Length: 225
Image (cartoon, rainbow, N blue to C red; front, top):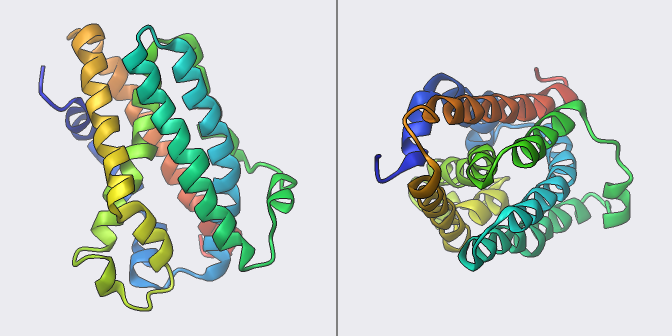
């Protein structure tokens, strides 16, 4: 087995992984040309998305069979509740949207599709299935943000999406990414077999497609599909 299962999965699902991480939404965000309406539609839905992802990480705690696995899942849960959700609330407050306003917004079909897919993977499978389903989001955001800040966050200057990029390119979130990759490898040491890899690759590819659909939802909401 390779030392980095995530890299193997991303390579196996390369077309879907690339369409997600190089989506027009991402490209235009990096250029600074993404319409604010598209970013706002995405961010509001991503807040609802994170609430469901918090449940998925709580499920990972439940599915864990060791204290180390529980702590790893708890770290992911804390990153969502204490870092990512705070970022979303802070940015949305600039548009006059409070937490209660966000929670009253209906989930878009793209939000429901991906989050329920992840929860189903966790409920029907084991901890490795769940973490692989989570990985395109958890690791992908870190990969995307680093790509959007090739010369560091300070070089972004007054970039309109600097705060979002900085959050995911910054050291605290990059540590979350590193821990997520390490956890997948640790679980694979116990549960991965050659026959199982194609199934995990299909899960990873499906999650990547659902992530791409989530970006597209933001563009479509702003009439920029």
